Length: 390
Image (cartoon, rainbow, N blue to C red; front, side):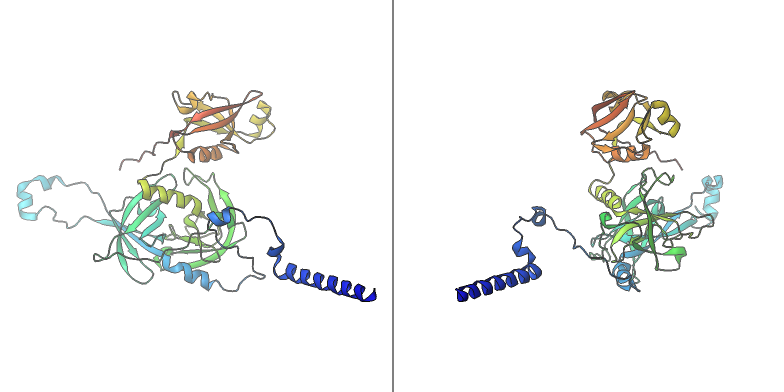
């Protein structure tokens, strides 16, 4: 009996030891839950654990991103009034058609980011707007011509493409695109560009805020705010994370002197990528529209309407014959949600509607007096903004 007891005790001890080793070194062997289907269907970037201490150098991130950031040089002919003497044949016979020489030109500079090995470059529209000649300077010293593929004035983005050099197709160093889901306030950010035309420059800061809007810069605003130094000439350059992945296109600064005061704004890569893909595929950007004029709900308005908070957008006007009119939306309604997503303010309403595809039937939740109503609206196509005549 004692011998059997010893054998039993030894067996239990060995089994517990094996279980401990397996649970420590190979815990997945004990997990019988099936793997999610998305693991097979999707390719996701690896999850990188946060470092135990802040690195003392970001040389690897800079080394990775620098070759993809380019300098953009533009030029444009200055339109001048033609002298009436040029219409006189006698004057033209002695002095020629243009005795003053070539028409004067104005030049500009900025930055851009190579996002595709095929030569596509993301930049700001205000960097290349109205330019009739665009030249790209690569980090290796090469100068190449580029053409404007398309632009989006409402987000101040433009897509360029480097043309073939001597009949040969170029393979260029494209930057790696980051994910906005991984970006949080306090993350390290590097701004890369060509400030004041001095040459390629890297500055460091942090992500100061996300979702900045109501700045009056663009129609659609959802900016990353950073204190990495951004100066004139940085426009269109790259805002990258500590791994050198592109997370934004540097666009504007808040400054009273023209220099950096620690408040810079960048367009998130999620927005820039969507705009870029639409421009490359169709040459333009399509956004949804329903034909309403919205007003922000102040505390006083909330009290007068008996609302629990100031969330939502007050419909101040509805265009006759518009999709909103056909869907039963009326002035005085308060828009609470679009396609199941809550509306916080008029800017949020504009963003949500613009993100819808024209022709789709989308649900809208409204508050009318003391009642909450649901209706569907067929989304229309937002007209492109009118360009001022020169």
